Length: 97
Image 1 (cartoon, rainbow, N blue to C red):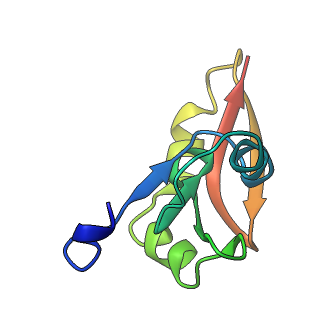
Image 2 (cartoon, one colour; image 1 turned 180 degrees about the vertical axis):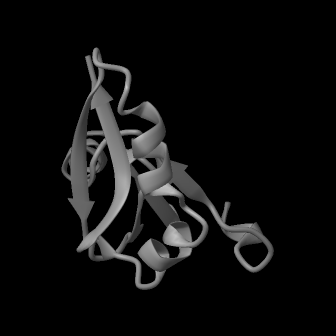
Protein backbone atom coordinates (compact mmCIF):
# COMPACT_ATOMS: atom_id res chain seq x y z
CA UNK A 1 0.00 0.00 0.00
CA UNK A 2 2.79 2.46 0.81
CA UNK A 3 4.29 2.19 -2.69
CA UNK A 4 1.25 4.07 -4.11
CA UNK A 5 1.02 6.67 -1.36
CA UNK A 6 1.73 9.60 -3.71
CA UNK A 7 -0.81 8.41 -6.32
CA UNK A 8 -3.78 7.18 -4.32
CA UNK A 9 -5.46 7.49 -0.95
CA UNK A 10 -6.82 4.65 1.16
CA UNK A 11 -10.17 5.24 2.83
CA UNK A 12 -12.57 3.34 5.03
CA UNK A 13 -16.30 4.13 5.04
CA UNK A 14 -18.55 2.92 7.82
CA UNK A 15 -22.25 3.23 8.37
CA UNK A 16 -21.54 3.35 12.09
CA UNK A 17 -20.77 6.40 14.19
CA UNK A 18 -17.30 7.54 15.21
CA UNK A 19 -17.27 5.82 18.60
CA UNK A 20 -18.19 2.40 17.19
CA UNK A 21 -15.72 2.81 14.32
CA UNK A 22 -12.95 3.93 16.66
CA UNK A 23 -13.61 0.88 18.87
CA UNK A 24 -13.32 -1.40 15.82
CA UNK A 25 -9.90 0.09 15.04
CA UNK A 26 -8.79 -0.68 18.59
CA UNK A 27 -10.18 -4.23 18.45
CA UNK A 28 -9.20 -5.30 14.93
CA UNK A 29 -5.84 -4.92 13.26
CA UNK A 30 -7.03 -2.62 10.47
CA UNK A 31 -4.62 -0.70 8.25
CA UNK A 32 -4.70 3.00 9.07
CA UNK A 33 -6.56 4.82 6.30
CA UNK A 34 -5.88 8.28 4.92
CA UNK A 35 -9.60 9.07 5.03
CA UNK A 36 -12.25 7.83 7.43
CA UNK A 37 -15.95 8.39 6.79
CA UNK A 38 -18.54 7.45 9.40
CA UNK A 39 -22.30 7.55 9.84
CA UNK A 40 -23.01 6.68 6.22
CA UNK A 41 -20.84 9.51 4.88
CA UNK A 42 -22.23 12.31 7.02
CA UNK A 43 -18.98 12.51 9.03
CA UNK A 44 -15.36 12.64 7.86
CA UNK A 45 -12.43 12.45 10.29
CA UNK A 46 -8.78 13.24 10.62
CA UNK A 47 -7.75 9.67 11.38
CA UNK A 48 -4.73 10.55 13.53
CA UNK A 49 -6.83 12.28 16.20
CA UNK A 50 -10.39 11.22 15.31
CA UNK A 51 -11.47 14.86 15.02
CA UNK A 52 -13.97 16.12 12.41
CA UNK A 53 -12.43 17.14 9.10
CA UNK A 54 -12.78 20.90 8.62
CA UNK A 55 -15.08 21.88 5.79
CA UNK A 56 -16.82 18.52 5.39
CA UNK A 57 -20.16 19.69 6.80
CA UNK A 58 -20.30 22.68 4.48
CA UNK A 59 -19.28 20.47 1.55
CA UNK A 60 -22.09 17.97 2.06
CA UNK A 61 -24.54 20.70 3.07
CA UNK A 62 -24.15 22.35 -0.34
CA UNK A 63 -27.23 21.49 -2.44
CA UNK A 64 -28.53 19.17 0.35
CA UNK A 65 -32.25 19.78 0.36
CA UNK A 66 -32.74 18.48 3.86
CA UNK A 67 -35.90 20.43 4.68
CA UNK A 68 -37.46 19.61 1.31
CA UNK A 69 -36.93 15.91 1.92
CA UNK A 70 -38.28 16.18 5.44
CA UNK A 71 -41.35 18.01 4.09
CA UNK A 72 -41.90 15.41 1.35
CA UNK A 73 -41.86 12.56 3.88
CA UNK A 74 -43.98 14.19 6.60
CA UNK A 75 -47.21 12.59 5.35
CA UNK A 76 -45.88 9.08 5.96
CA UNK A 77 -47.33 8.77 9.46
CA UNK A 78 -45.54 5.48 10.06
CA UNK A 79 -42.18 7.28 9.85
CA UNK A 80 -40.81 9.31 12.72
CA UNK A 81 -38.08 11.80 11.84
CA UNK A 82 -35.30 12.23 14.36
CA UNK A 83 -33.23 15.33 13.69
CA UNK A 84 -29.58 14.58 14.19
CA UNK A 85 -27.17 17.43 14.73
CA UNK A 86 -23.56 16.51 14.01
CA UNK A 87 -20.72 18.92 14.58
CA UNK A 88 -23.18 21.79 14.84
CA UNK A 89 -24.91 21.07 11.51
CA UNK A 90 -28.15 19.26 10.73
CA UNK A 91 -26.77 17.14 7.89
CA UNK A 92 -28.43 13.81 8.45
CA UNK A 93 -32.00 12.58 8.55
CA UNK A 94 -32.98 9.44 10.37
CA UNK A 95 -36.43 7.98 10.08
CA UNK A 96 -37.73 5.13 12.18
CA UNK A 97 -41.00 3.32 12.06
